[in-house]
Image (tube, rainbow, N blue to C red):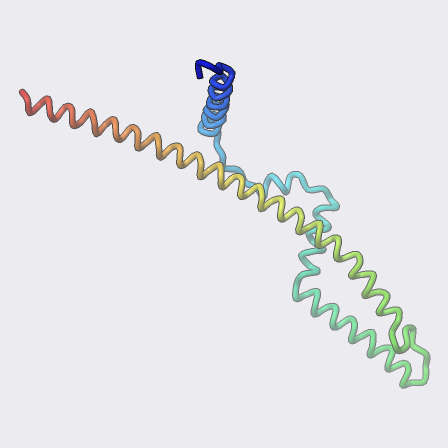
Length: 163
């Protein structure tokens, strides 16, 4: 250290920064509601994407889609049996195109919603880490104070026995 005072200054600077961050962490509350923070930042498009993604990934959507597809096929097949040309005769190219368009639109909407959820999970993990670090520092301080109390108690007890 004497030969290279710059290294000593760097070490002291790093320690000071770490102490400053720790002190800041202890002074401020780390508990935040990530759900409320994320909800406040959501745009109308984000909310719509989340609602669509939630519906698109539900049994309601699957049942509705199966019912709709079956109804589509039944109507067109019934019209064919009655000797009329259906609006989308077999092989149901219009239905296939509609399903493909739905899939093309639904995939990025679901991905956007999942990306927001992943960001929320990262924030939640960061807050958990800060809370755990703060609790660990508080426990260390409590243990240090307990050691001091124990030492003072032993000292007082030994002085009492000497008298």
